[in-house]
Image (cartoon, rainbow, N blue to C red):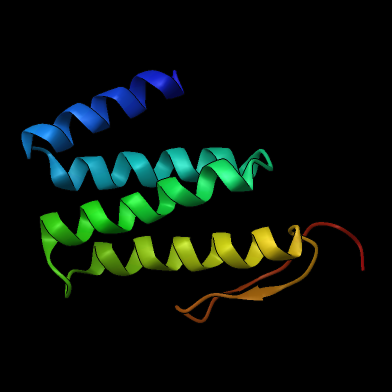
Length: 100
């Protein structure tokens, strides 16, 4: 299903349509990959989600803040291997389910 989602997003971006939805879909796909430990594959999608959302909604939109928050979180967790607590830019404390 993921290859189909990526194809749809690429097609929509080429046409310059559905930017808000493309940002959301890429963000969800990135989260899907990240939760499966595929950090290297997830990060470029999170970056694309930020770009698509900013182009579609502008730099002051709340959804862009969420995409950036997800991107930062994925970078931090990817670097740590999801083994420690992380504070997101929104100030949320997320703890790993692994015992310390």
